[in-house]
Image 1 (cartoon, rainbow over the protein chains, first blue to last red):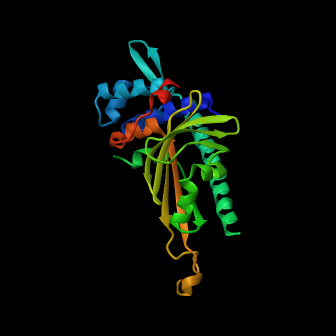
Image 2 (tube, helix red, strand yellow):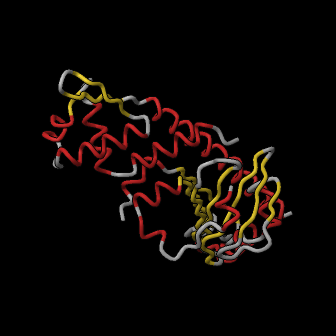
Image 3 (cartoon, rainbow over the protein chains, first blue to last red):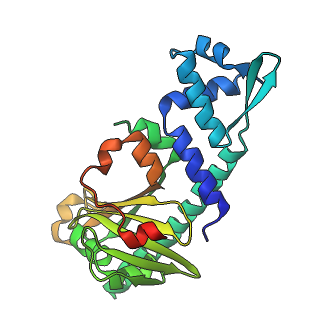
Length: 111
Length: 148
């Protein structure tokens, strides 16, 4: 059955389909909270580009922004990743069943 | 185009089946045959690019549109669960398995051909994001699909 997980997984896949964005996720995962400027210093992209990727990650529920004085700190919120993994497990299981039926169908032809 | 970019997100399955590609394809290219393994019920007139249909598995309904058909080689389609599932790309490719059933090659006539079926499924949004060129030349969802 289609569930809210499907929509979450789709958003996560879209967000992570960009290789640079996955670098940003790894950099975020390496520290509890970090500013866009600090991330840009660690990555070979501009602060503006980092901000754009962070925005996409926030939209997908993979990061949150927290004001800290004049700065904004970003933090990774990986729960949607678990939803995406669950989607893969479900879809993979469905294919196992389908291919099992196809195999059986071909075997029936032999009889 | 980057294959590497999508590897983490893909559902991929492989199975080796008895029979040559033509025999396996007969079970893939016929909507009536698809109803024996792909879904409980298949409403699809023909398997050709642009064809739209409906699949039912249990109480789940999926809209499906056929994207590409290369007989005995490849079938690409997109589907999405109703009413509001994600659009997903599904690609089935058929490959000869060298050495038939793995028995002695010298056995000749007794060696039975086998086919490797590879299935890949991933959200269409991810395909668009990593490989914009894939969109080119593929039919888009029809008006009824977009209205869903």
